[in-house]
Image (cartoon, rainbow, N blue to C red):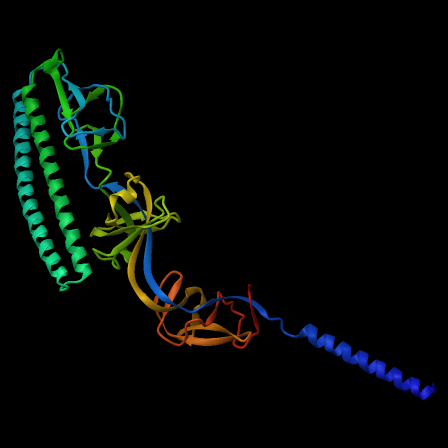
Length: 402
């Protein structure tokens, strides 16, 4: 082979090496696709909710107090023990004391007269509650007849049934208050009858009886001790009649309304319990947050409408989460809220199209915690990038993370 041929081969080899080096440089400095998370645009149910922490409480609590000064015997009942209406729950022995003076006698008579007036008022309340319950039952019968003819909606029928149950419960509570007022009258009468008696014998014994059937919720003390009139002894209630109390920010309270649906979550079981707002108290209170900030809070009371058998293990003072349903719909075009970002004066998302990020302005509606309503602009099944970073630009190369 001559010298000229060798030179040509050497030049060809150098040229091929330069081309390979250039190709490696181009490959090394080309943009690397970004790893991104993508989720599809979907259509389905959507709810806008407000979540707050609350706790359960017994609807009707009865605090048993000492009607007169005396020596309370040791309490035998424990917290959680069941009691029946009229059952003896505490015994007061009269103290050795002088006969009531004239002023004390007049006070005792005045307390008796007041108890008799309260008894008359509670009996009148029972009459009013009976009328309301009767009217609610007649209204329910009328709505059921109309529902059978297809003239009213299912919602109206459910509301009529709930209203009838609520009126029946109010009647039952009014009757319990009559029993409690009767016990108060007997206690006031006993103060007069036992005036001046010594602690010796059965004449100095005063039995305190349960005004209603229920369980012991609280015991103020255990051992025998001297008590004064008005000192609390026991608290009774029926844990099968619970409601939920939730304190929310005053700015959130104005978004709520009586009758609004509530889902009770994180109460100990996986499934939520259905409830509805019973009352929104009109007065706020100040509460210091965990960060030391003063907040104006409002008590919101929700009543459970789920069957009692579903939450029979709940008790008084249990912690729960209340999810207030502000708005909901069954068929909504929606996109992950984490995919949205501000674009000009509106909103936009990045669509994943053929390995590229495509900036797409969108018009949003109601916003939930995880999903947001889309008015238009995207089709169901389109892939959008969630949690886009600030450096992502229109047309950038992307690779969806598996």
